[in-house]
Amino acid sequence: MKKQKIAVFLAASLSFFTLFSSLAFGDNFLSNYLHGSYGVDSNAGLTAFPVLNIPFGGRSEGMAGAFAAVADDISFLEYNPAGSSMLQRTELAFFHNNWIADTNIESVAYATRFGNNIGFAAGAKWLYTPFTEYNMYGESVANGYYSEAVAIVNASYNFFSGYYYSGLSVGMNLKGAFRFMPDFTDKFGNIVSGSGDSQSAMTAMIDIGALTRFDFLKFYSSRERNASAAFVIKNLGPSVMGDPLPTVINAAISYKPIRPILIAFDFNIPVNLSDFDLSESPYAAFGLSANITRFLTMRAGLMYKGGSSRVTIGSAIDMNLVSFDVNYTLDLLTQMQPLNRVSLGVRLDLGDQNRKQISDRVDELYLLGLEAYSRGNYADARLCFEEALRLNPRFEPAREGLATLEDREALFQRVEDLYRFDF
Image (cartoon, rainbow, N blue to C red; front, side):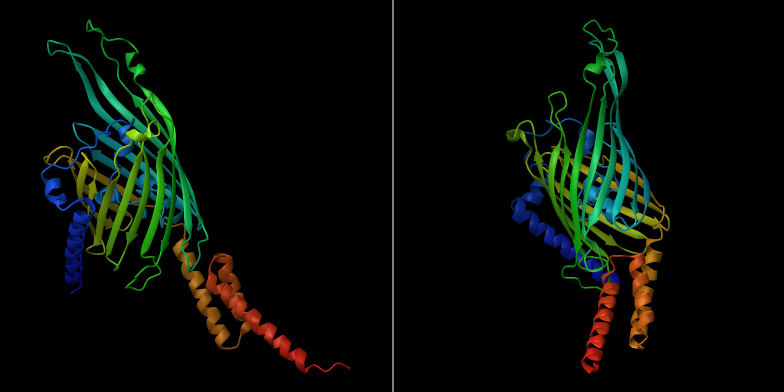
């Protein structure tokens, strides 16, 4: 029965997406999309470092990049730097992305959380593609690899977090990028030593993000917040050899109506900082994730972007401390293409630094305090509430318990004062 409900919800979600697509992008959106007749953005391809637009892989790619508001695993590093301070567990991940035209991307990322509110992460991504130069006779005269690399260092802090509110997380990525072009030949076919340096480059940029989670139309019982919202500015930095970086402003939401289903929507506005008139058109991403069993998750997504839209499907298998992610992406550049890209990911769960154990102990102390209060043992109740707050200073129910005890003692003292006779 549970699986039938999930299937019905998935069908309803697909119907909703079809209706949404028609309203947002036109009645013939799906037909045009599948036949490659959607509009091509005349400002596409004007930015530097395309590696910044190619995802690691993992869950975020399986949802077509609709991940800024989800940001609940290590994929957050590319979509919302605020995610690290809300990450449940420490993760180490490795990704391989088989891009188009013999281009590959290798990535590694690590993320952890200190205490309840401080997050840290680091990652690196390397794109490489064979480079071969031929002369007029079709002979190979120069070869090597064109490559781009990005290194990321992340930090974030979760403000106002507590029992009733998950907080407002604010984070930043500091990124450095490098582009290497191999040497090429002159008009006589001779390799010019150091000629590749004229087109090689390096630069730095930042990402800034905010994330909050809350309950909205929640139809199941859990402390987990079922909705979230995010705002992110990515790749904010100077131009590189006259070409701007792919700066993007992102607004996103996610929603979990029932426990196994997650829906996410991201709206992106590219900004050409060198010339606003040359900015690409806004684009959107829609993602859907469903927990089929305890260990199997299926995902699907669509990114609608003029001239470079893509459809993704993916799955993940969780085996206790190791998770395997597999995604297939169909990039529709100007027409329907054959199967062209598969990404693989391995995520290692390195634990939660005893946060779950501490949280369970705080709950236990709070319940013991309530029990002691109900028996009239107010001293023990106070000790339990104070110990709970020592372990988690933002556990508001224990603070409320102490306030109740203090109000009771104040009232008792007032009654004593009223009946006291002064001689």
